Length: 119
Image (tube, rainbow, N blue to C red; front, side, top):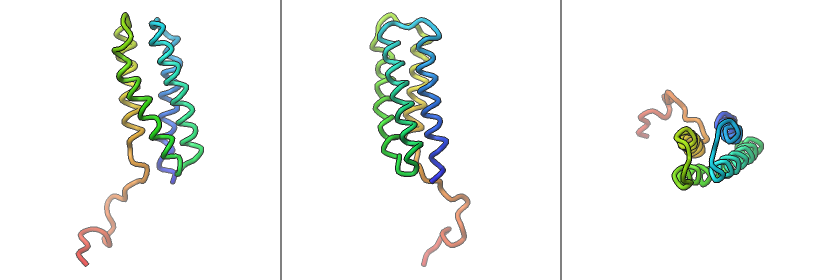
């Protein structure tokens, strides 16, 4: 189903941003490695999900641990800049939200056959 395509593309874009942002401003070593690793993982998993749509749902679900790790690791590396922490928290929230969105589009408004059908 083509409804998952924008979700998968946004995972790739978020991963690419995370990878690029690791080199745009000063990070601690741990934060830079973390950003690069999660960025590469997000790009790969988003690409797999895009390639295997609609059955690529499993690849999108594998993005959830990456997002959780990025969220938790924002506070694990001491000496990090506030900009990096905010960036990691924002991207982690985006990855978690998009990865857990339902794939199938809901029909709205409901057709008369399904709306308040008591038969």
